[in-house]
Image (tube, rainbow, N blue to C red; front, side, top):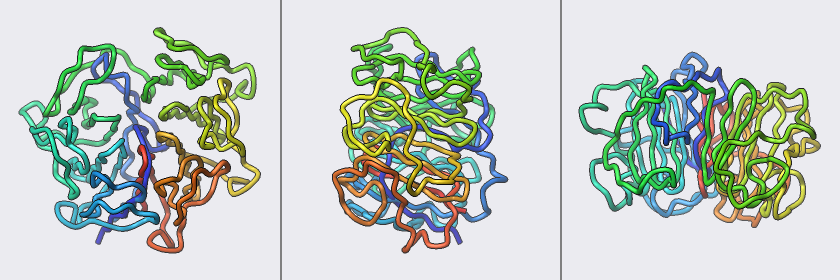
Length: 367
């Protein structure tokens, strides 16, 4: 039977398995990483783990106690469910099962849990149910950002619920998932206070750039139009295959399994071995320690911490760990170099196939 476990992390990003093109979403919602989950790459009975801050029940442990090490769960509506996709947000999380149903847990202050109401929190998972445009849809991918939830169905349609807090549109509350169509194809998009877009191996960004989180080689208050990430330093010849926008930092993954970052590094969230207020140019994550010889296949930038997944199913983290969001079994102010997630307990013998870094919590899915 399947078991679920919990840990701390942030925002929206898909697994590293063969990305699909986003073909259907609202033009204002350039905030998603749409990558179709290849179910054949996941075992029949995956396990779900989590750790970190749990004030709003975002780890679905049934209580609000913080979790320092990977912890399993899976009772209630998730009992015996085959979980195929996970997404960790600020104070809520979403999982998708093999039947195409989505479940949410954590804060619902802005209707982000898709229950048709606002307010309160759900420490136990609840299935997202909604209006006619959403009913009977098979969901294959979920993404979350701040107070919103995004769901993508097998036909490429995207639905969202929660607070509309982007500057491009007037604030408006959506209590139930709403579907929209976008008429342009892109590889993937990731959003925070800044937005990254990946198209044909090139990375573009716009929005906040106060600490160099757009990677253009300089800082600026805001870039209202898309700009190209600086490739004159360590990126020439690199083909970028994945992007992830954190709180005020960004991560890039190249086709050869290398990770690069830029933006704020106050807590060591760029994994370069030191802290700094800002890094406006792409810089390589340190690989002289636990990452030596590892090929990275997935990246996830949280609020002020980062996670990476290697090809052999190991998870490593760096940055802020004040709530245990790095899953190393102890609280620390920061970890400047990549460090392995603790696997002596619930994760022992598990091969991780997907992960997601939230604000102060993290989620992983194992085979």
